[in-house]
Length: 282
Image (cartoon, rainbow, N blue to C red; front, side, top):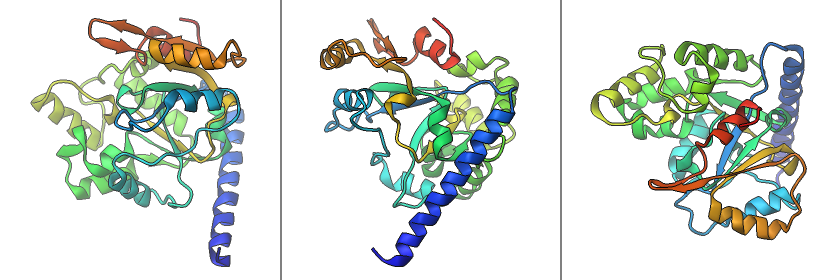
């Protein structure tokens, strides 16, 4: 490896460490911001090769961490990461603040704040891949609007982004629980391109995708067993995972087993999942 490449990687690592320390110091000094939890769903439903039960087992037994994975729509993600200044050689793990989105995986980890604090990259006020690629509800934007919005709606972790999140949630939903449950925001509550997208979806389509307003958080650290507070999982997958664990349940990890109903399998929007993000019992 060239010396310039090594120096570049070392510089990125040092910067990430400094940012992580700054973030942790801010969190310790600000007692008014409640703990926030992050949702990571895996693998993508179109990834037919991945073994989500095996991945979950490896993390929960401490034999592996959950790191960045190749995206399904790679060109869209590469463009978003380029605009966010992310080095392709050091990509982050993506999560949503207070959300496990069913379109993004079959098993969900609810991850503690400590994971993000170890090596944070930053946060954005919506799904950056969808925004950069103008996918779904973001399709009403032109390229210029999308590029400008990606910068405008993204924050460095050293900034008090949690206060901005909570203020936005209060304005758009009233209560944090409504954000966690995926309720649609109040009319005309945003002052950026997200409002244009929401208005257009409401006018022309049925159903809003919460990725239009759910905050994304990116961190370079792998998700380890000590970061996982809860696992949301479908009943059949739980049968496989529990057989592998064979009674060796990791301490402090809550397993939230979904249900099968008339409309399909439900395991990410259950009351227990919302309660885990709120840090209380269901």
